[in-house]
Image (cartoon, one colour):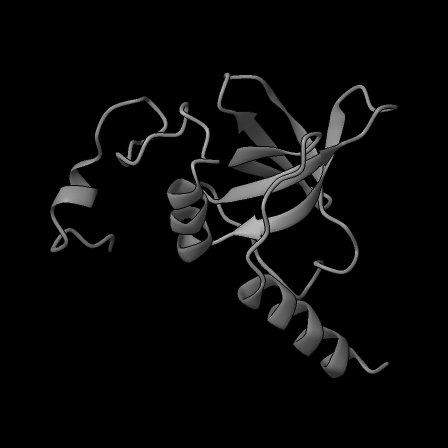
Length: 129
């Protein structure tokens, strides 16, 4: 399979499918990316750990701070405790909230990293320069 075909299928899977987390999967929020295809994530309970990005997503899908993911736990990891299985975009988040599967720890209000409501979210005319 060529790179372009692979990319097309991966993007179609991520954008088109509406998945629900299984009993062993969890929804996490991305806090940052220390590099090497690892992402620092936080659960709705406040537990922080690293999650690895599988090879099918690398150089095809980009994840930024504040995104939500569905992750599978990795038993043998000390620092890296999960692997990313799905990336949740806004429409996926709305679907999970409607189904009642969204964790209570992640509320709808947009907050910055210090737990305060961000002024940028209220004022769309604030643009970083």
